[in-house]
Image 1: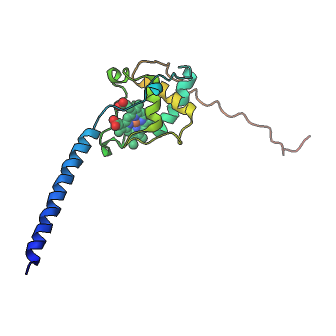
Image 2: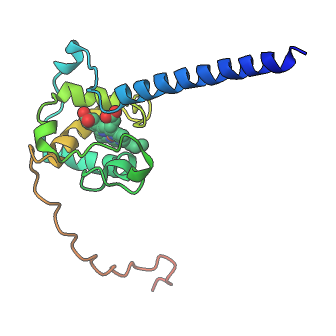
Image 3: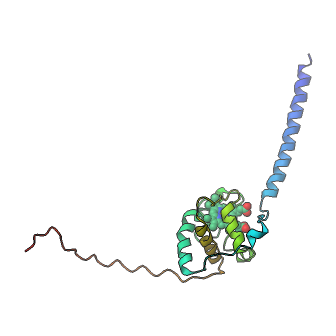
Length: 169
Ligand code: HEC
């Protein structure tokens, strides 16, 4: 009965295959882990067409809060509410030493393309919104500073509108 011998040879082959697969997977994962982003040179050289103005910064803030803060955190430290779910963890955007090495075009490219687990924002956000986010990313790293938003004035008491249905005299 040759069956048992055959079975054990098949078993050996499968085990061997699995081991090889595991080795390649771990090499692959290690390579994937924190390798620098590959950004084409012409993308790196792109300039932000937007002024680093207060208006652009305050336009970017709600976009950041809605699309980025869950991972990168409200203040950009990479400590958003979902950050723990991801490997690699979201970059600390306040790391000025690291962030100052990236050109505006590079940051724009990263936001546009994404890299797992970071999603691509190419279709989700307009070009203008992505360039505004570049300004936001600079502000998080402290290389651009903006005055705090004006304190919200208390709502003035609503003036009584004349009642149009009031009987006219
Ligand atoms: C799902 C979580 C997630 C969201 C949402 C997300 N990111 Fe990321 N981001 C990451 C992770 C994780 C990395 C690191 C990826 C890597 O190094 O491979 C990263 C990297 C970056 C980098 C690159 C910095 C570097 O390491 O070179 C920038 C810039 C960035 N994110 C900005 C943003 C902006 C702006 C938004 C919102 C439009 C955003 N991210 C949304 C998870 C996220």
